[in-house]
Amino acid sequence: MDKFEPDMFSRRLKALREERGMDQDELAKASGISKGSIARYETEKSIPGADVIYALARALDCSSDVLLCVVPLTGMA
Image 1 (cartoon, helix red, strand yellow):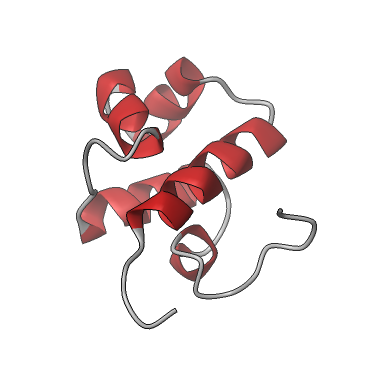
Image 2 (cartoon, helix red, strand yellow):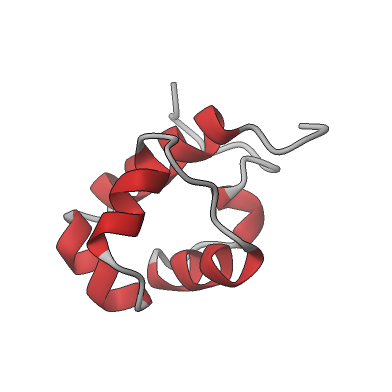
């Protein structure tokens, strides 16, 4: 990936959240980011900053590289 691609990030965020059995409320609480913001990231209506990406990655127990699609996620379509 040469540049940030919001559609790939949005799909990856939602897939990781669902893979971990979390709904948006649970991810919001775990990351300290509002449910509304998470919904906007998952629907490509907003692009998160570095601090948000870091918080989401920590809450999802993955690296920022995985969340940003820099490295592949096994089994991801």
